[in-house]
Length: 181
Image (cartoon, rainbow, N blue to C red):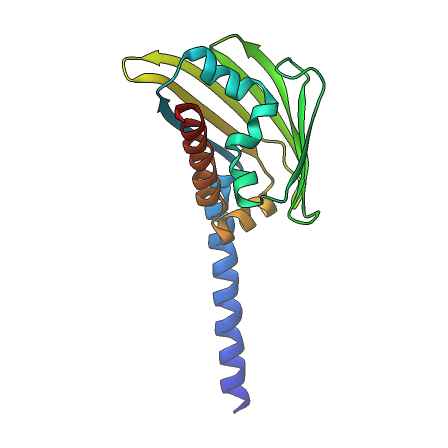
């Protein structure tokens, strides 16, 4: 019986080590995440651009506010200019951070960096480009975030990249809906 117990424990330990090893191998792909999403919006370039540029408009198309309608938010600085910030506190104090405009090229580009403090620490960036097409204004969102190996392991374990992709697409879909209303 003692020999069977040792065999069972050995199998469990080997399986656990294999799982963790595989997880860290797979998570190495998540230390640098880039998600690029686009949407074409029927509206003027100025209207679409201003909906993104002016942080006061973000609650109208924020996927995070759609997921947590009780979220508190505040715009600090001169809205629509470099240095303006959108601060949020949501999920009963479990989500906390801000995004800041870092670059503006009128009607063409808005660059933002985020400082997320809760539920985890991260500093992603969001770059938005605006292009006129025959079908409307194409908005492309380029999201980037870097993380350490341990954070990447947990992102792999819980499927965080798929959630990020879904949330980013939801935001662009809400942006389209608000402008085309």
